[in-house]
Length: 185
Ligand code: 5GP
Image 1 (tube, helix red, strand yellow):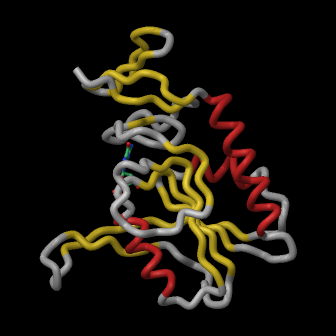
Image 2: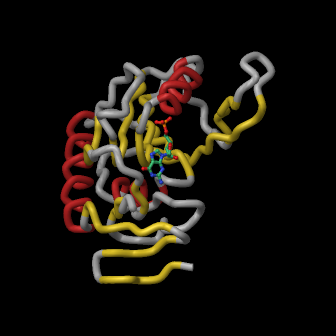
């Protein structure tokens, strides 16, 4: 399904993408974020909550550079038809650890409008963590609607659909080492 069309261009299913953030730049920025976390969480024992599926590559690279004692848990945002709103409600699943009194860091692949993150933070806040911060690989500042404090952000990107480094298009493209941006035709 994945075919290479040119060195910096890939076709994922029916769409063409071009490299927008090479792996070397991602490495640099992930390392910068890890330095910030090591500085800010010195003397504490944070609980990192990596949101699957998209954050698996980012979390693996980032957490190997985190040197403070920490725990890591993987959570997922399930969905069901909510009765109250009539729309789709995302619920947190897979959280094994107690969050109460912990310094929690949510690790995400991308914050777009921020609505998903906003709801996730709301659920986590109800569990009474000692502190709660957001660490995202990517942020699209032009799309952000929610007023969320994004304490750690590796890369700010324009409002284009991206794949690679864990992010997918219809399940494909997560395996690329670079981040690719869609070519609008
Ligand atoms: P938000 O609630 O911030 O608008 O959306 C967040 C979710 O939308 C992300 O967790 C991700 O699943 C998806 N998303 C938003 N933008 C992109 C993108 O450019 N590429 C991919 N692969 N997913 C995206």
